[in-house]
Amino acid sequence: AQTVTQSQPEMSVQEAETVTLSCTYDTSENNYYLFWYKQPPSRQMILVIRQEAYKQQNATENRFSVNFQKAAKSFSLKISDSQLGDTAMYFCAFMNPQNIQGAQKLVFGQGTRLTINP
Amino acid sequence: DAGVIQSPRHEVTEMGQEVTLRCKPISGHNSLFWYRQTMMRGLELLIYFNNNVPIDDSGMPEDRFSAKMPNASFSTLKIQPSEPRDSAVYFCASSWSGRGFHEQYFGPGTRLTVT
Image (tube, rainbow over all chains, first blue to last red; front, top):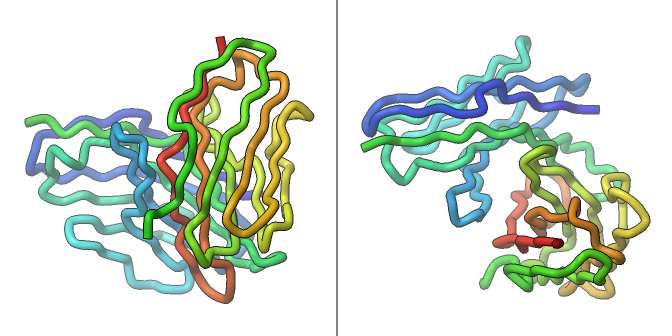
């Protein structure tokens, strides 16, 4: 079974700083997807960024980028020029795209609570 | 599209009562997922459906929990009888399942408190 580990329960940085959230995972699969989800105080789960394991290039979405190290099974999220609105819980998640009976379930890490201070 | 709709948003009930949580997936999606979020266990998948058929219910905690999907536009998660340890936020998510990646869209969640 796949597992996802986020070793940083909480982090705090000043506005405009860069912050990196860590995530490691364990799987025997060669092809899979990795995600970072954001959960602000509103509770809504928002997809921030995704990475396909077969792609060597790290995914980027505006101020958000990942450092995907497949051999090390590491998938960190970097937030540049952090903003107050980035304050949220961040979850790393794994998906095995093997389309067993047509559904793809997510396995989540425990989350990192990120606070951006003014 | 209105997104995934869940009701109620908040539910407070007494131990022993039956609780029913409802979910309307995004129109056109054929996979539906129920997750539970607690401080102790984080986000965990309870059950998921594909084309209205339950595929994997191994995450359902015990027989007190049951889920149904009578049609493509509606699902329920029922707890009977409820216990204080069931207090959590319950999320419903939906996606299209097919070749390649398809994003799961989450509803706003139902915060359940069992006293």
